[in-house]
Length: 347
Image (tube, rainbow, N blue to C red; front, side):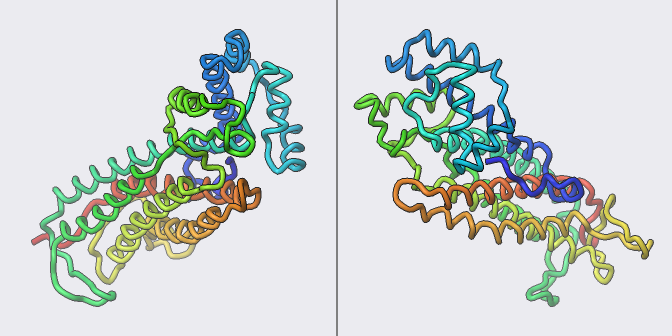
């Protein structure tokens, strides 16, 4: 999976995330698939399915592999996936023993799990950073007064700490959603049964997973996409929780209330006196963006029979964008919290 809308040069500085987008580049995708092929060869050699010399050749030669991107693109248009063309090139340049007993989906799904795990570790680290910023604001302004508002009307007075607590709860739930995600290796062969490997198939899969730092499941998940949907749900949870913070920020920054002060935000091309809460608005936009896309990813649960080209391709189009949006939200929230200079009215 490599496609991300946030690669647009004008939109990405606001709505993108350079660090996470890099993990969905074509180069990162191919590198992860090559890692899968090397780990598979070593595990197969250990179990005696290919020779140790063949595995050693694959491991030693993979670093010199130079993909022909034009042929990969043509292969994608022809086959609906890039792996057949990729494997042809790998067999020519690296070893004819590469990819033994695997299917295209094994390489593609495992590549995504490797990169998905890396991105989720980044997201977890950033959410911890957000907690630290909220604690700092709480320590500085927590006893200040705010007017609680229900249905956007004045209700009763409470403190800044009370509102921060609501923000923290949503973010804490997002962390839990992230930690519940699973990143298993995909290795099922042509129809998910690993027929070529007999009663040693699970041991081979477990060895492969361990070498790649991924989990192992008893069953293949070619047509069972719960792991993918869980990742989408977690991303939408992150952007939703930070969107809640963003919309509160916008409302608190209104001139009529002036419950919040901040620096470094947007100007108007005409009204020079304005200070627009651009980053906070972006958090709301990203929350609504992911809330829209998450329903599309749920469509990927409908895989006909043992593999679906249509549902699978939809995942490639939607989930990378959701992960980048979650990354952008965490990046923006950290910036916004850092730029906040005062909240509430001093007691």
